[in-house]
Amino acid sequence: MATTDPVLFAKALADETRQKIMTLCCCAWISVGEIVEQLQVTQPTVSHHLGVLREAGLVEAREEGKQTFYRLNQKKISACCGRLMVNFAPQDEVTKKMIIASE
Amino acid sequence: MATTDPVLFAKALADETRQKIMTLCCCAWISVGEIVEQLQVTQPTVSHHLGVLREAGLVEAREEGKQTFYRLNQKKISACCGRLMVNFAPQDEVTKKMIIASE
DNA sequence: ATATTATATAGATAATTGTCTATTTGTCAA
DNA sequence: TTGACAAATAGACAATTATCTATATAATAT
Image (tube, rainbow over all chains, first blue to last red; front, top):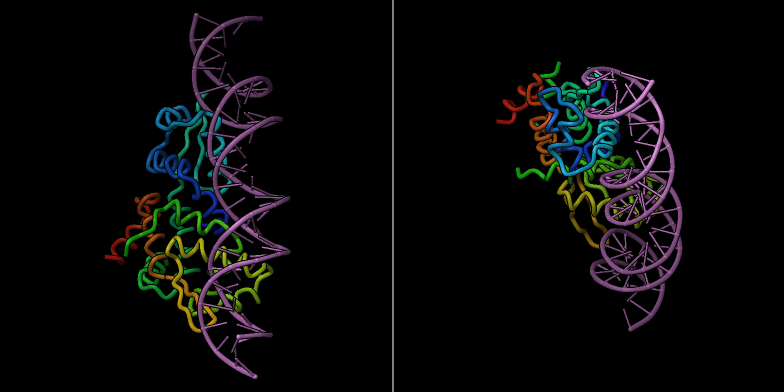
């Protein structure tokens, strides 16, 4: 799993609306319209945030007719978090165990 | 280990200069002056970034005479990354093993 | 064909933020 | 006490970004 650049990854996560969207599409495919329904922002704003998440490789998109469904790329997120731990918490016990777990 | 709010954590990481500073103070105490020497930014800029990292609880500070030394809080970073994994990659195998490792 | 629906894109605007210079605060040495 | 040094703070400015409205694009239904 190629990890996203750590700065790009952090930037993608650095917004409350975006993290809400991530929660909504964490474990299931969800359409843009369904995301809009659950948040207090307009459809173009949701599309913008999905674009940011897509650029960072954190979501996958699937088109179906008029709709586009998005789903969080959990493997990528796990890999990026792992890299942050290796970079910035290398001596931490949890990090060491995570490294072993991911080998 | 109380984790920082995930959005605040991501914002703290969402800057290249800040990640460079984090690398410099990852495994050792380092003074503000030493950080300035190694980066292409002014001393107030470094102080500003250290303030952001301090607000997020990602660095510890120790004053010694005229100087202030900073060190990355690896446990906190590991805990915040772990929380991101639980939030956004709950079904990933590495996440599951990390949860077990941190219990 | 035309209307309707879903999403993306363009462009504007306001808020946030990264950086700088100037200054203040605090510590140590002469 | 005065001067030098280290770091923090204040304030200005420019770049980035989050949001909106308006519009374009694409698919489906009538």
